[in-house]
Image 1 (cartoon, rainbow, N blue to C red):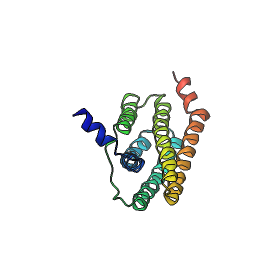
Image 2 (image 1 turned 120 degrees about the vertical axis):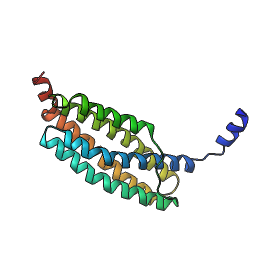
Image 3 (image 1 turned 60 degrees about the horizontal axis):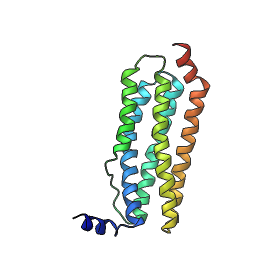
Image 4 (image 1 turned 45 degrees about the vertical axis):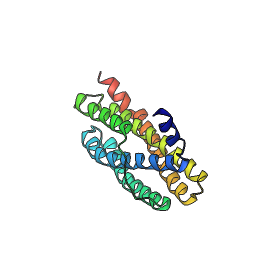
Length: 173
């Protein structure tokens, strides 16, 4: 039985891995799209609320680009349950519940959002490289566009944390 499983796995290619990872991030982006309004509503500062709303709009465009990548790849756009993003988003919901009304809420939301961004950055970086290796330059360009947005969002979140969110959490302690 183990030999049979190994032989089946040995027929898997980089194209298969690309497809599985693409389904993973498609699922993740759609889950993130549902979580962002909750995070925006829960944030205390107007600047953090605005950042979450801006990222929601960006995420809609990212989902559309992923659909284009599926099309280039010749596959139907579909997600595959991603336990990693489910866990990261669940932690963000815990922050919202456990710190509601607390001075540290926004600092926790920034940290939670950055965990999401870092997950996305790893996925898009990998997918971009694999698309290049597989000769899908158009897909690589679309994936890079999203990667650049994710990197910019991460920097913006860092700036929010450093420009006052973290200090306000500390001062009120």
